[in-house]
Image (cartoon, rainbow, N blue to C red; front, side, top):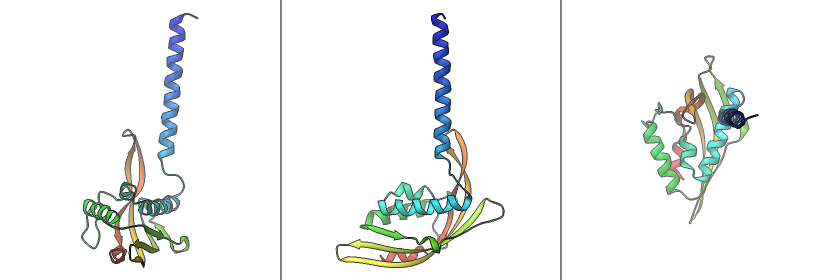
Length: 168
């Protein structure tokens, strides 16, 4: 084989490996499981992000179309989440799995999730605890992985019942 043939074969192999690697990375980023499993996983990931005080980890689940009964829009609720997490000390959430009720509408594009939350906030004066029943409205939105590859993920379009957090 001549030198140009070897270089061409190596280039083709490198492109093929890059393509396979890209596909694997995109597939790894896509949600897995049924719609109910995806929403349940979103709740677990959101709970963990709150406890880590990871604002982008929480707000990534908020739809640009977010509106709630308190008058918050997407940008205002994202700001409020960031402000709240920065002001509070350690925060522990507990969402019992038996309290989670997820209903995916027949269109497969909208859903609701209801669940009970126990929240404990640590402060220099001790800790405060509150209990809440939260309801989320969700919709499946188009997203892009690595800015190029389309997919769909569940996003929160409205939340009710979280007002008890302000008392912590």
